[in-house]
Image (cartoon, rainbow, N blue to C red; front, side, top):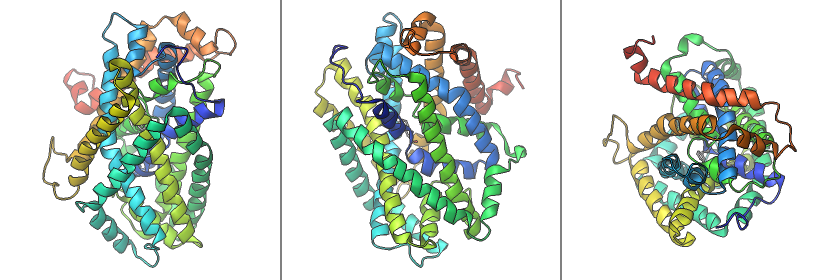
Length: 455
Ligand code: PHE
């Protein structure tokens, strides 16, 4: 596709909606609270926020820059900007990451569909915490039912990606995301006013620094990459669809604010209830699916709230899976000239295969372990804690050290139309802080920093 033909997001709001649609998803409402619960509450939150600002924002801007300058998919953009190097492999790694992320993400997305059905059937009313935990465990360890929902979800994603960027993504996000935000705020009010809810707020906002370890720092960083959809070519691909009239740094600030706000509010909705109901905050991936149905059961109009919430959560997941699939599709269509329809079909089948592995690893195949983890855990950990941060590191090196500084400045300023007072700070973060910070965090976790005498 030549530059001229390349489709653009329709409007300024469209850009923000699409990128925020990618960022806001299960990462905010499902993964963030359970990671935070497992890794010690407020201390995790503080490190998470620091990672978002110091690493996340500059890397998102860098991805937009690469995509909009390169005008191509994640690998193609690198090829255009550095034709002689091997940098395009960073893009290929992103495509690989997309597959693995989708491999567990579609399973959890399927769970949200099951919970819509349960909400409609009024299944949460009058149930105690232990009943709700049982319901979840029966369902998620089942062999067939989660796979049916996963397939439905994969089909929806494929259908929207088939319909194309502009029609599919922008429209669904603009209206539904503000609604999701409102529901989470309402849930937050209910949760905070439950008896004993205050302990949850304490857990969330009163840091206990003795809980910080290399594992906490690595998982907070991984969560920042995951939640902002970074380090795997998603924002490069979307960046290539952003119109030149668009102010990239504003988009970054808006998307980051929305994403972080929704994550923090989700935690405010969940932890007071967790403490009030005596649920273990370190419960793991089932945390949200046990806690929130409980909150709905205690809420006036809970029946309607529950339905609305799970519908919107599915939509939020859908706007994320769309962006993940788009990374894969844009790559194979542009680099190999395959037909869009064929790529969508084969990629979906491949993803469903991984989805079967992840889903069954929670049930009948729970004994199958690789590096001590089942497939679900493996795909989740390997992508967010290794692949995405390493991808982010390479992206930072590319923009910081390989691309021409003046060309970046021109791209960011729209050839002088926009103010770029942040440019020096941005360059400093991307050249030094991001590469050094990410390396240290990963090395520290691997225990290598001890070996080479950094500690
Ligand atoms: N950011 C999405 C979420 O929080 C997940 C995602 C990761 C989407 C990577 C695209 C790319 O749910």
